Length: 346
Image (tube, rainbow, N blue to C red; front, side, top):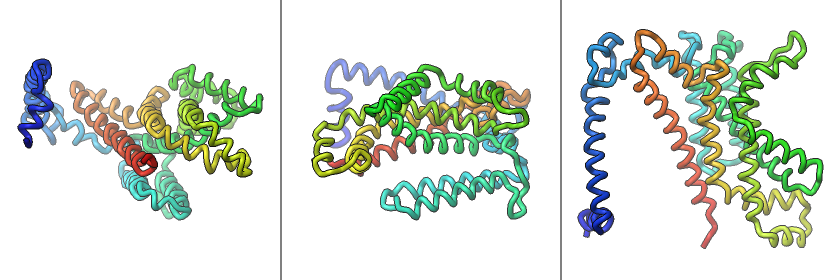
């Protein structure tokens, strides 16, 4: 009964389980106390790099304390960094407000449109007396959020269209969808980023340029959409043929059948794998570092390359790893909540 009964039933209910439990406890005893001592007991939080080098036994969280604004905002003008902070807070507020499905109304769409325009104006400036800040100075966490959010938002509907196209009976549309999906899935995201940054500008007329962030955004959208398409296609194949026949029997056309009957069921089925693709795409935004975009990973790399803070990369990377973990955990929890709300099984 109680805690002791649970321990006996789950941890010591046999010879092998008891042995594994003891080995795991011994391993945790070897790892957890030294880590706590390194990370908290002997750590430094507000010192400089020289003090950290003298205290070699503990973590140097001072690298975060002294470089937090650069890690989060990159080369955005120091005196104007309240603007990306405001933009991020507005973005997070919209996300939290949108969690409740009861609020998914037309008003929420308008709120997102106004919010996105507001975020763009705050970041870019040029209105209401705000200083203009070019996109090549954007970086850090706001850039990661922008690439991830717009990439995932645009990639999902494109992936759904590609999945429908691959199952289409029209040869041209089906062939195009198949070629696109197989071609994009056959190359790594890094190659698309290189093409968008280096190869694509070569084909533009002289004097015409496209923003590097926009080019990276398009590459992320095209890459993610191909994987979403295959996930959604799996959901479409799981719908029984009787659903299509029932829709046809009541006089629904193709558009109405897909919008009212097939897609709602298919998209509900593929929530877990879709969220897996979206989480992977969110983490893959860090690859823009190879085309010299100063996202969260790149700003951290610049900090750890500073001679004053060399040797303390573990603390810096653990910090941004926690940021990525929190974002991915929130996405995962929301997908599980959405599954429970949409569950119709008896």
